[in-house]
Image 1: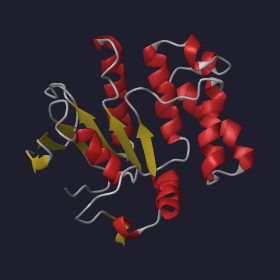
Image 2 (image 1 turned 180 degrees about the vertical axis):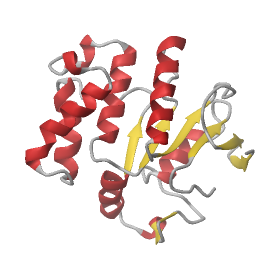
Image 3 (image 1 turned 90 degrees about the vertical axis):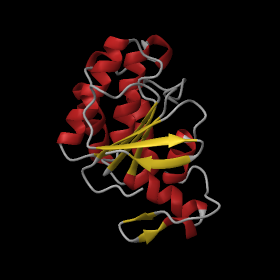
Length: 198
């Protein structure tokens, strides 16, 4: 699997086909038994966990299917937490950036709310804002619309297409039909084997 800067790669396959495992390996959340993972000439599979974590924090935004928001933090603090953890955005710019991202997601009136006070679509948009907090070149999304109604799912897909048009590289996993979605690379996963279709 080779992804170029600016690609929008869709990975499709049935539940249990290995899609999420692939994303976990690509982002360093899981380790691979064989093969290589390289990012801009660096062979990541040889790195320690701390090297992988530092790289991931600066280069990869991850959007999980089940949001993974911190329940005791407000919407604003969930986004700030990512910046505080990585430290790549200067402290004096963090609140401004978090508010900008939340506004761009249509969540400017929700900054003081807890995740439990939000709808599923709002939680997913907070998760996307958090994934973009450190301005990573790569956005990885694991079934980001899987738990959303079709209208909300469509708005999330439109947001991803807009992010890709603005220069973000995106790798998205889905088990849904991708016929109407915007992407330029399509991979099919079946029984742990990946094949490019487009």
